[in-house]
Image 1 (cartoon, helix red, strand yellow):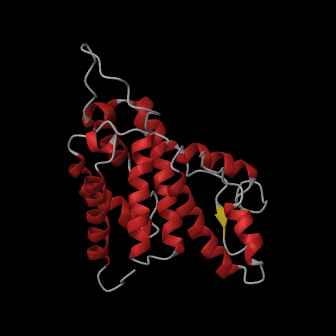
Image 2 (image 1 turned 135 degrees about the horizontal axis):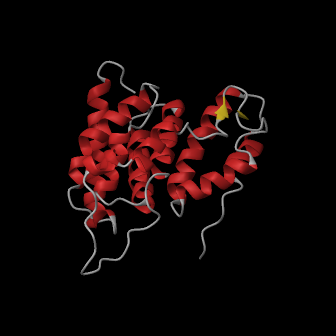
Length: 220
């Protein structure tokens, strides 16, 4: 990433991400009203991720995603466009991994799917209502970052000590990314690049099999 003006790069990445959403007319995301209000908060959490500040996400960002009615499919699609924009700006594999962790963390606090609209449906709680709900925000603040993360430069799992991604993490990634195979493949590809640099004696075919070979193939 251009270290001379990181804020400008972050602004460009978020602008490109939201522009891709608008240009593609993405089903689901295209139906979200007020998605442009996500720009400023998304820039803030992206700065935190790129600067390796903890926590990567904030309760306020999760609140806003819920207020906008985003679900896990929506955040997967948004993450796909965000990671694509990040790759174009050459932010480096470590930053891509942190953004992947950010997306996975936020995803855990969103509903699995948007419920169908009904005439008597209750309105989505506003942000202040979510802050007062200790069962949501309080639990979010107490939750640690996901376990079974990669430990560089050995690329062993922090949760079980096996080669990363271990079987447990593979299952977690499939659940976290849902059907967004493209976003998951981009994330794992960035991990592969970083691991290849840290483990120069690891044969490339074996590295590809380890990081990407377990992904389920798309149904034709």
